[in-house]
Length: 250
Ligand code: PEP
Image (tube, rainbow, N blue to C red; front, side, top):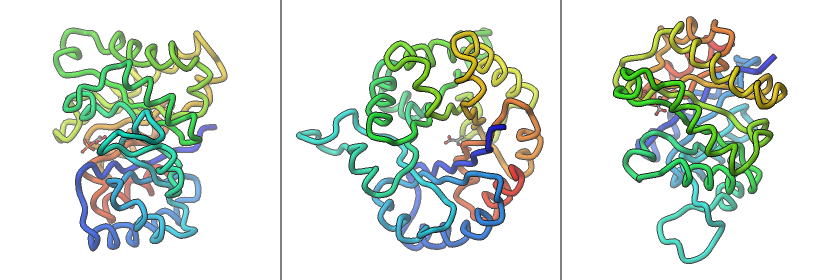
């Protein structure tokens, strides 16, 4: 049995005050959901504050991106070594907004995945197709290509200590979620495709769904056999709403 993981991606949002209120508001829902791993990905400037607020509460956290380099003359970057020092467990990699606005190719994403894992952080590999690719019937081919880039560099076993987040780009921040049947179908395809390379990896890896997940849609999504939780953007900024998504996964 895979433990469900519910992870919030705060993107470029937050103030010192809102971070305090949000983390404090998540401690009780996270404690109550004893069968769920709860995690948040704040902007890196808030990591020290999040570390102090979380204390020993069952809320893991991580960054939304990381450098492939561990130190040196790389202005503006955040090293996975530094992120680890701040108590991060996870690290998003290949989010569609990084792919789209920062030109992160599959090769860059694979290199970042490797750097994250080499520094004992758990990569959360985001994959998913655009609307155009979806309408052209290319969803399966797109996610396979995205996964293959990582597997070619790191080996399929690397996914045993990673999380996959399937996020159709057309559903992110649009309010248009995939139906639970649509999401289950592609999750099952991903797991089957992985199983052809390693049954152990396919059985173990958590595959999260992401794309406009709300409390109202969470339960139905989580009832699907191959959906192991969610990566949540907008709804993770509201403690009550995100708390209800965590409760739905429990
Ligand atoms: C995301 O940022 O990964 C995401 C899924 O966002 P939203 O829930 O707002 O669609």
